[in-house]
Length: 407
Image (cartoon, rainbow, N blue to C red; front, side, top):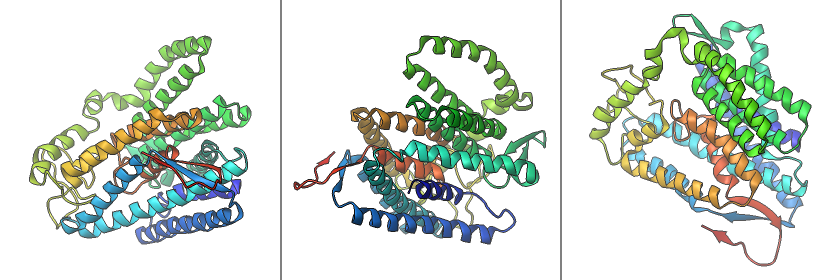
């Protein structure tokens, strides 16, 4: 079951990659097929586990966070009525609800198996192994087919791992999460040799993607775990090491080709956001243009920016919600995140709190510059859905009294 859970998670993450760069049609068929297959397998295994373990029941708490997330999803469903790009809205809604189903089935499966096996399949362990295996595949691909696995930017002067398989920033976020899970496993006294090797592999992939946002998120994770360790010597060594390492990172990754203006404009994102809010938002401020649609025109899926590039997504998950679901959607998302934060603060489970931090920081930072947790179909959405369930669902021995729900 441990191997099955790891493979399901690995294949699910891989289903968001462009596995056949030369064929868009084949890529879509494989993506959709893999996702529905992993959801179906998770459901079947869950039913089997429930049938064999009737002495276990699930406990649900802090369900307000989940209810508000469903409210966001159903507002998106209603937006079909006013969407300026109905076909894309329907496709994205299908992927969103399918992702909710997968996360719901898979996490219940992981919780009940982990409970019965006394911690044999912690979520951080599954994520650590699955993501590291993906990182290894990308490193192998780097040498076998560099033209596919590398992407040239800045006029060909900069090559970034990810290539045409996945956006380098998204791969960087994935590697940062993998490294975060490795640190979490190490902090819990799990196998040091393997987790140290996994950390090295994931850091290598992270650096090769040259993703500035993901690198920043990973550094915050390192600082978090060092601070939580309470080891004063380690904290001092880290501070001294940062003094020497940061200038190198700034020169080689942060400021590419010495272009400071590119950094200050966030690679053109700031002018684009300004145009979206100044010219796009006022046209439909209450309910927006429809789920994942940011264009006022039904004839194009791109917002034609005046001072920057044209794009079909905002590169900021919160601006994305504001434009495609308006103020109503933005307030639902705001309260949903507040409810999740409340559940995090109230949780008494030290491991789940560390797991939530290790997952949330890279995903949140990525959400400020890329697809994000409320953006177009991607695994950031899936990870955030998992995070919501971390704080909601647990397992215990079955008792005669009814389930109790906590808000």
